[in-house]
Length: 352
Image (cartoon, rainbow, N blue to C red; front, side, top):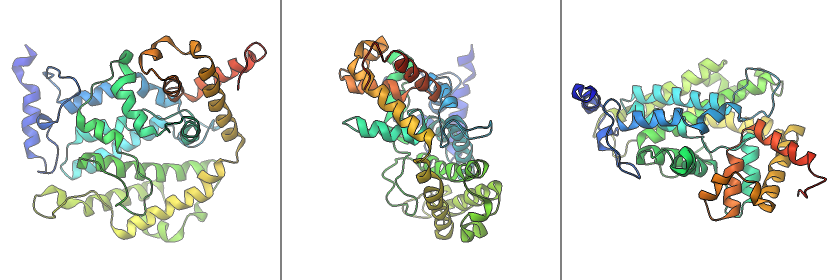
């Protein structure tokens, strides 16, 4: 029998060679509901697989990252962003001798709760829903409740913590990022920045919004002129400046961090993107259309709760919460199609 091979136990034994600051699978704080151990996979490998096989993960391929309805096949989607984050995070975790499986699971699950139309959809739901909307909190709600017909994925505490705490408000300081309780979670949070700053530059150049020559000169001189060079420079800097996490006693509180020059250069690129790309997006007709779609859907389903899928009645007693859960789970294509159907029936049904 497979259980007699003790495969999981051998993997857990190898983890004893991890950094003393790494999370060991067998020392996980556990799941919301107890389960029998898997004979082959550690708890974090099991979490990774559950995320990959979830419906929410599949839908990421049709959710906007930054550019809504771009004309081209090579723009980043929410799915490709997620894969880039997981890859960058795994590279850093492996170099620092942290738990790569935990890191990968957090990276793959961190954006499961993102709305259609990227941050535009998130902003609209945050404006409309009285309790506010934050995609990291919705991602946790997805894995705890909405997936698996209301049973959730029953992930470990460490993966859930990393998903909830992956967001950050700014990049020019590392002190205001909030609390994440594992170094693997910190790795995913900084990998998220490395991924989106660099792929959003490439997409903006591809879209003709900016050119290479317009990028901040001091940042490019330090990090490199190509996407590959910049990612490599950031990742190597993170590994070098977080190297002490490999050994106990080197620093009182180990942390995943960048050097001051690279952090400043990365912040400069991010500020440039806000000024020249993200903020200008709000004036585009695709953004106006996306905002209109999300507002229409929110108003309609709050007025017509009987039109919500029946299973959403199991997720909350509050109507607005059920509406938010439904809309946040939509892909760009599905949200557009539903709004179009509502427009066609406007003569028969009042739509706000």
